[in-house]
Image 1 (cartoon, rainbow, N blue to C red):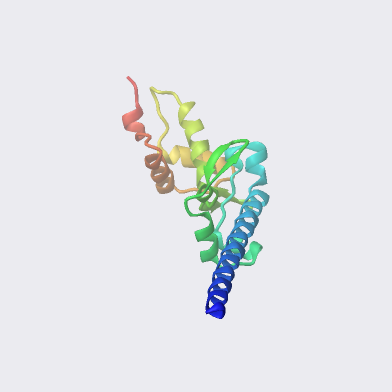
Image 2 (spheres, one colour):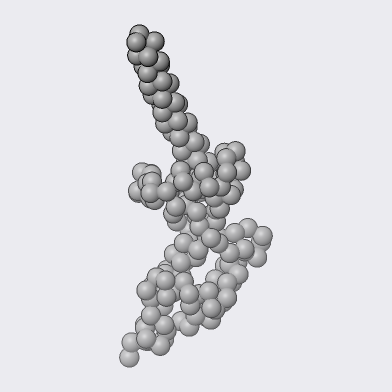
Length: 166
């Protein structure tokens, strides 16, 4: 009888220790993932949204030394408070476009620049998607008219014909 109780308690203690180790491992992994995101996105934190870089979960997984699916699970449903506000961790994983100089610009950064261009346009003669694409190309961001249209629609901005004020 005594050894049954002892065995039961020993199993429960082992389970508790396993749970504690698992939680600590999860905390360490999440910390490493967030630290890697901060390292890669340092310019965003220092200078603002237009400096947000394209980033894949694969890249963070390689830095941290875990599988991509581990990064995906670690960031799922989690938020981080930063000096720039509270962000869902998924926000930092942006697709992007290659620039003329070989670097990349995130889609959020491009959308911010597009919004600035559109906010500064003449409402009697609004800019076409092609004109916006040309203006971004002049700033070194290689983007097609169709991508400008897609981003404009995602931001809920009307086409140039519908933005025109008479």
